[in-house]
Amino acid sequence: MTIIVLLIVAAVAFFFRPLLDGVVFGVFFAYVTRPIKDFLRKYTKYAPMLATFCILLPVIAIFSFAAIELRNQISWFSDHGNEALAQVNAALEALGVPAELVVQLNDVLMNISQYAFAFAATVPIRETFTSLLLLGTNALVSIFVCYYLLKDGDRIISTIMSLTPARFQPAVSFFTVEADRILFGIYIGTFYTALFIATMSAVLFFLFSVPYLALCTAFVFIAAMVPILSGMMVFIPVAAYMYIYRDPAIGILFFLSAIIFVYLPPDFLIRPYLINRASNIHPLLIIMSFIGGGLAGGLSGFFAAPLAVGLLIAVYRTYLKYGEECK
Image (tube, rainbow, N blue to C red; front, side, top):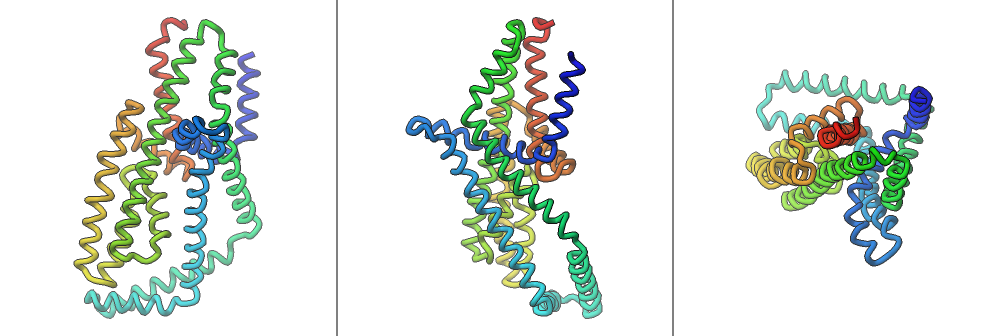
């Protein structure tokens, strides 16, 4: 019977594997939107649906706008590459870079651009269309997973408890509560910290008149999902741009303001406090799981690895409490 169950689980996992990204993101969105659902259900029975779209629609809008703006920038660069190269040369000359080095850098940039266009021309259309279709399918799956977890989460737990032998029900009940508490703390702390960083970044970009404010804010929001890296991957290039094209003092002031008001408080105060307070897990373990998951599994790995770590810790705590009783 154990072998049969394992074979069935393996078959289900094999067929659902292409949709794993959608399931992981659906779980993440469900935890993020649950406080909104708990608030709205006092007033309407459509709370799960409203909560789902309260979060997903802005997120989808941000990602869509970022993709469109990125495509526009690539199109502009393909038509105005020489102008961009002239601006780079002017900036290098303003910094006092030797003329020989400028020529070498121009050759490198031209070779890179030619290689990039040649590589883009060789991208197979069929495989690209299939990947985009799978990406859209996973996005749709994440919406449905989020909605039904919000709507029927309690019913799913009740079903699991009804299928569990009475002897193991206390341990299973403790595990579900502990796992839910841990994952809620990890995901809520991550999302709302990223939202805080993106909001503060938008204010900072507005004060310093940074171009493409919405695009830069979207990139900061995506980067801020990962602990430690946060928005510095965006702040450093923007500070370099302001240092070269505006004024060195303005670039330095922008970079220091980003570190003091946007980077340090969330990643070293707010995020560890929220996650540790809700899940009682050391922040270093969470940081390692996010970064390791991203390196191993891409974008979905950022959220799948903390999910696995949270479940593993819940299993360990359940064993410490009920291990001897269930033997």
